[in-house]
Image (cartoon, rainbow, N blue to C red; front, side, top):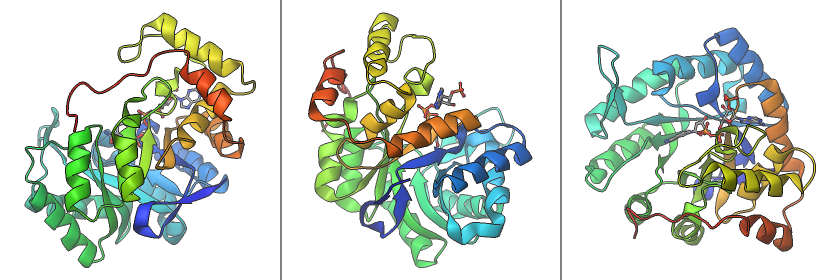
Length: 296
Ligand SMILES: NC(=O)c1ccc[n+]([C@@H]2O[C@H](COP(=O)([O-])OP(=O)(O)OC[C@H]3O[C@@H](n4cnc5c(N)ncnc54)[C@H](OP(=O)(O)O)[C@@H]3O)[C@@H](O)[C@H]2O)c1
């Protein structure tokens, strides 16, 4: 496994990190998969208070209780579950974040979070208040760093201008190249790390039957699958390699449900970078999507 700096954080993160959203309903099974990932060199585990209504954080906390100092835990805040469990509401207010972090810390069985991310965001949010909460938690040692998860260029730009964040999480793959136009250049210039999610497009770039994805129709997705296959070996690893080679990328947060997926995805870090010709050949297969909303 190769490692990269996470923006200005001073942290070194594995090129492939573990997206915990795909974990199952059994703590013991989840722990086995998380431990195998750790043994393969993965050091960053990305969860959220939203996932499985806290159960996901609990799984991560149980798995790493005995080796907390050897892993980096990223979690997210901003989606507040309704008491009756029927869903959640957006809440980026300071008072809520200061409460929610305590629940995450308890579930994660730790007294600090390495990377605390705002789980979305709009320009209408009380951004200064959110940043105040993050800075306060940092000063108290409850979080080491903070970032935002957003696919909106205008939100990312606003955060880059105001806050001491170290990372942005966004969706990026051969099937979703929208960050290339505005988000990646902004992050590269600011020296902020991009955490890529959706690198195998929910498995479409990893052997699942072709289906529509965003504005791409199934036949276009099948063409991309064919282009990845010409590289030889496992398409999942090449799909993740494609994301790893893009500007500003610190890590690809790969959603992992099984041991086979874990091993296939980790292999991306062992592949050589795509040559410019190989990359161009992949890019030529379908036109890139661009954001039509929330542009800067
Ligand atoms: N807004 C946000 O902040 C946000 C949103 C989404 C995700 N995330 C984070 O990003 C992570 C990844 O996102 P994602 O799950 O949307 O995208 P993803 O990594 O593209 O998709 C993960 C899914 O793809 C399939 N898969 C993965 N590797 C595979 C392989 N080698 N072969 C075949 N299938 C494979 C699995 O599907 P099956 O389970 O069907 O097998 C897996 O559940 C999440 O775990 C989470 O940590 C954050």
